[in-house]
Length: 220
Image 1: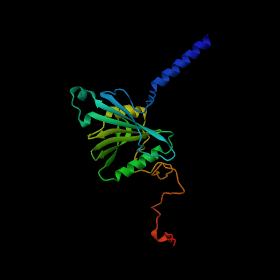
Image 2: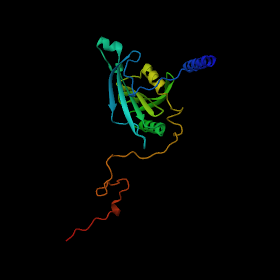
Image 3: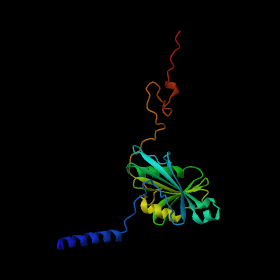
Image 4: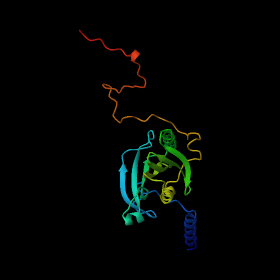
């Protein structure tokens, strides 16, 4: 009886200790929250076919959630700043996710019309993307990429960043836009998913040299 009592006490102490440590809540089963977050009401879920950050040999699927500001919806006046979209891409494994995300952001920074800035919102290290009528916060997590924002917005809601940051803690290092590229290997993204056909191969136009092409003579 005494041993059983001690075991119960040990279990209770362990549970109390884990609660005191403030363990992170798990990610939603379908990637995004399908319920209200603070002042933001959930309005739409969607599974997205297009994967924005492609990782070689690492399958992924993406989920989207749309939220509206509760007060604006009650008033019947929804502006651009009253609507937020969240995209979560979930990969089969964590390999290459951080490197691919950093490369994606650095390429985006070179495009005309976009400005990127490292920032920290509610303790979440991320990159702010603005330009071409869009504003987003983006970061990578273990096996995930998270993107919060939308078109026509002037900023991103800290409440949503905090909620998603707790469930998808950022893996971004300091100096993510200018520091050394995270470790990993690179492979070119395939242009098509169609299988190789030896009878009708796709020409490699990058290596094409017209001087080396021999045109067959017309048979008489």
